[in-house]
Image (cartoon, rainbow, N blue to C red; front, side, top):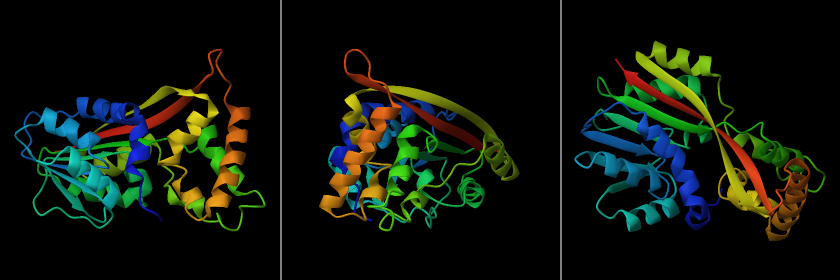
Length: 257
């Protein structure tokens, strides 16, 4: 798949940073020594961690060179490393592993989350936020349009790029068995966007990537036109031309006992 587009992602920087801020607010650590920002992206979440824990050794990890370039540009005093997040292991036990909007791209959460929790120092925290929106019209319509005749063959595997989340009971069980106390909650954010094209631009940097990457430029334009038309049927427009996009997210703070 082509690399992430940091500029497109940061078009909605405030909206994308808010869940990271809400997650960090529930982390019950006063002064962690070692902090890892797993899937740090362009550094917006890493900046929150640096402000909250100024004396910590903070490392941002991401698999995207473009995202890391932006993170290093905006936060030159912090450490950023390109890494395969599925295979990553820390050199020393972190006190906090912070994973904002990244683990939904990795498979087998029943094994992944206990594995990450097992890396923590005693008393350390695994803090996770994941979009929980695969059943929302914005994402259901991606899959439905991909099944239409012009796109079906090229996009046969696109829907599998995201991992379907477990239930809250699943995550509580997996992490409790890994020796953690678990705090779980869901929040639905409502984002006012400029028309239905605003929804397209929002998801273009994230959820739409697996559906656009296999297509050439002409195919991408055709897919986006059909997708936007489908969005018009699913999301009513407000009187002032805005469209409200509900966006559910799942939050987990697991503390190693």
